[in-house]
Image 1 (cartoon, one colour):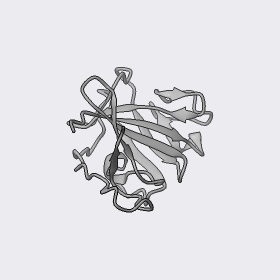
Image 2 (cartoon, helix red, strand yellow):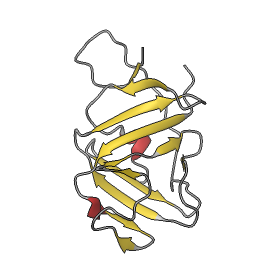
Image 3 (tube, one colour):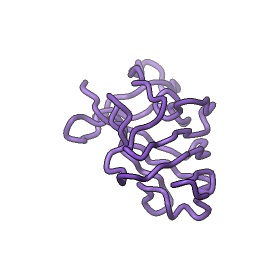
Image 4 (cartoon, helix red, strand yellow):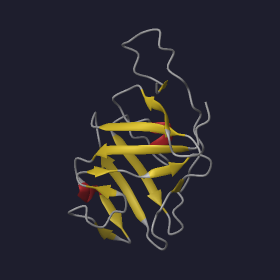
Length: 141
């Protein structure tokens, strides 16, 4: 399986937990990649570039998501190849520079669209041997 991107669909509990260009985003109207009530960025796994991020925009994100998110690995053509098996935020992928304890997405995005302190995460597949196993990535059929 070749994974190039991470697609996020997070139901953000408190939009005001982010600042965009230094301003508190009290209504969630400033943050790029918001679609209705979800935050839906696509992140390139190799270097932490948030795709289609507006040049010159910075963001300090500390979103509480809890169990209200879905996450997919995408191939080069941005087709879904695997889905996160758990209910919690995959921290190795979405918490850089802090610990989100499974409930938070914590990122600082620079003006160039790169996530600060980004380290490419290791992709661990879900074994599929226990239907209650909520760790790792499960292949999309």
